Image (cartoon, rainbow, N blue to C red; front, side, top):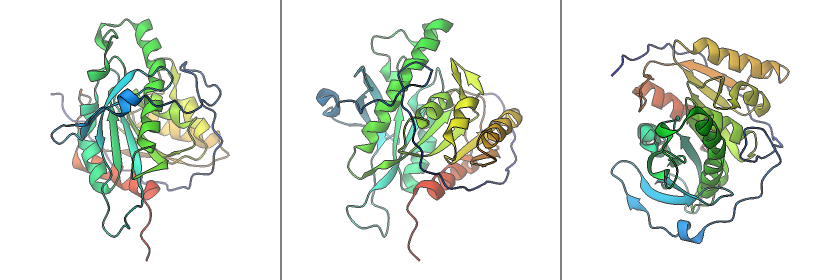
Length: 292
């Protein structure tokens, strides 16, 4: 196990997210027109959930457009203390890095669920239990990986739509979290889905696998975003935040925090301070405020 990377916390900037009219996408990395909601697959939606110890419930859901099966872990909504029956809770979709799997983010998922979120962690196509008939990611060449990553947007789109339709989940209050290059999918999807409430990006690359994350962040135009960076990537993270502000008349909507505890391993290693800050950020942006 490689040694953990030391971090130091920076101040967070809290800004409201304006209403955005976002365009939606074809599976290619370039932006396109907004897609219609995908029809649900009765076979997939009716698949019984199977319990996984400390890892939510195993579910299968349809990817957008091609209706392939995406395997995921689902932490169903729980009624927060003091909340009336029938009220909904916000959701969060977790996206692993290339070559990873959904279980890499179980620690974060459990903390968010405890905080009051409904959580969905997915295995992208060619990864984990969603390999299906695909060639596994580790057997692909670079061109195959770039094409597959572009089509993986369909998996995320299907996951966000599925989560928003679950009983007890607020359909227009879904946040997204990405790990490293998984952030490219998270940010691109957010530019096209007006129901996304906030983003958390763990050590995001500026550009990878045909996606220019830095340019996509500029399109977010006010969507609350937390970048958790390592000491080595702090400069790149701050540049992404600064470029976003410059592209939006100085509006600072990206918060950069450097933490002790993201180790460059697969699965990633998190410390409690990082998972606590992620939960606090998303709670501030997405959870309903208690009446005083």
